[in-house]
Length: 406
Ligand SMILES: Cc1ncc(COP(=O)(O)O)c(C=O)c1O
Image (cartoon, rainbow, N blue to C red; front, side, top):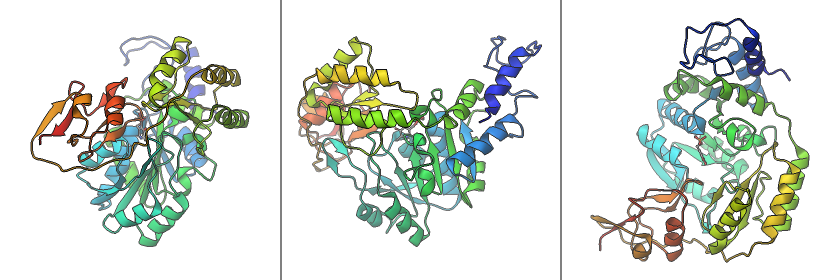
């Protein structure tokens, strides 16, 4: 398949070219700017437009928009489109990514929480019943599909419910772009969705696409530029086109399923996410693997998550199996939430001192960028351990959890 952007970049390197334009490094190479021959992301009529049209077709959209600012900018653009269409109350699963929470706050949307159960230390996808309950009040729904652990909501039943109510379903597909062309891809269910191409397809970091169908196309076209740079990176743009057109790698998909079985990974329906339970031993396991040059996507204090893409090599999977088989496992705590009484004033306490107190500010780990504690949750020993052992955390103040004073 033709690669419009990569071909244009290769051709421009052969051109005679004296740069009296940005970028200031004045070097030849792929890092060019918007010139007469390289098109313009804000008003695409050339190679960017051709690449976008192909990408929309592959992703099953009426229109797709390339993003060089990650899925975050696509989530913001979708939320703005919802607001501009009159949505005021948005149903949001309580453990959604921070971009959904921040974007909703930016757009002045009232959040209607969709309950999520915790099991095996993970916030599980909301049930259809939990969605139905939230939709008694909300005008629209955003779901994450798949989530960072490779689980999906019941998309068919939820899409039907939303259609029956004539309300939009939007999908944060930051982890789902490798599924295009399959029944699990967001395009089969959502009015608007984002594909985090840089996470599960071979694109450069920050490469993503936001897409829409039907009446949402014009609204999204209006909102996208508000969250997108006017100086896009051509290496990222070209890598998005390359990644979306990258062929499916069924050998790796099958090999991944074998690895999951061999290592006792979580039984999730997404081949690209191998999630291995280590419980309290996850930190030791991560350090052991990293000292041998094997880096997981994250260590959430219970699980190590290994992210695959069609570009993963079979010999890398073999190495993973050899090393992980040698590692001891600990028990994963359930992560069940206990709710407590909130107060008016707050205090910051070290995680171990905060055990038994009621959390006043959402906090969690980066990645998976999902809350470990929500306001009103009683701080458990397990949550304290995971937050204090985190490589990076959000919502803490100098490593302390904000809790209500008694
Ligand atoms: C569920 C989810 N949504 C959105 C994002 C934001 O994606 P990006 O980092 O590409 O902006 C992430 C990032 O980890 C994510 O996990």
